Length: 435
Ligand code: GLU
Image 1 (cartoon, helix red, strand yellow):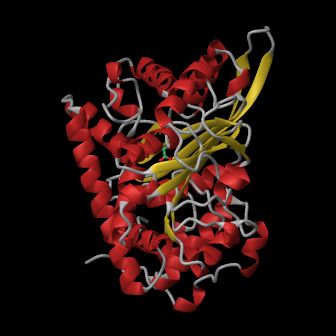
Image 2 (spheres, helix red, strand yellow):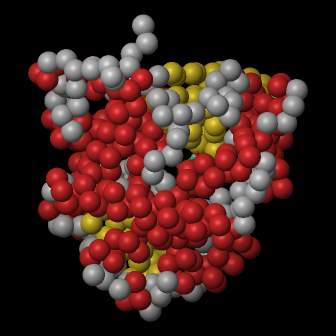
């Protein structure tokens, strides 16, 4: 019999009413959604307490020799939020905005994300405070190797498996894999995902997050009775997620009216030529100077006259300040945490159908899972097989969340948290508390 972790229900902590005051603190944003779902699930207080705390938080100071001969000391984090369902899984970001609170929130989101698509993984996240755009390849390599050494005791195919995230890529994953393998005296491909295909990466991994966004948007539009062919879209962020989602949505018949990257936004009512925008970015490294549309601000992009809004850049872009002005019927959260908790109720009032981040952008970690499976089996799949299996998992997960949202009359975000928290909770109950 599973251990009963039930305690008196009155020890459940109620969501903090003032949490909107801290609407940009990602950990609080995550916790306020978690609290709501936990209450609806009537989660027993013992388990509630367990799931509010990260299992492990590592902070490392990393001296790195810079190209000018001076030593810089960088700070990095790795947070393992919950590993009850399997090895910790989650990306590593290099960014000046990184903080322990942010990494904790992102590690929790990874836990819920892996559970909502039912992967046998827990959740983790890593981050290093740095400005990679100002660093040379040599400096980035030394930083990556030193960071890997700082967290090497947690890493491993059975314990903690990183992947790319903001400002990290296949190359960074290759250095991480090499550093880990050197110290283990043999090549361990499955210690990291999002690697180059030549060294154990999976076909389709690079496109997976954007592809997943397209798949769930298609499911949402189908549910709402809107034809994909008649749909206009605005995409914020033209990196790995936004640009691929835009490209795939065009292939499904959508018209992309607005795109943006960190240099600004572009609007074309008749539809932006996405292939031309991709070519432009390949040549110029950003959209700066792109002539395929009128220039608009990020704020104008978010509130533009489209059916679907795809925020695929950073956190906290849809807030209580701009949510009322959003015209889209569907929001597909390609980024992690693009909507603040304060904006949720406004979007609900406007009956905007939000596909929450933990579901919408789960395509990336799903193909990371495929990569880990392929590495461990030493047998690699065709791109068609990867895409087909990704499609199955995304459609099934969307259906699971939609069903619960209709049953409980809650929005898709709350339903997604309910699906994942109950999956994590079930495993905790079965495993019991080790004493
Ligand atoms: N960084 C990605 C995410 O936030 C991918 C994580 C992974 O593949 O482990 O979902």
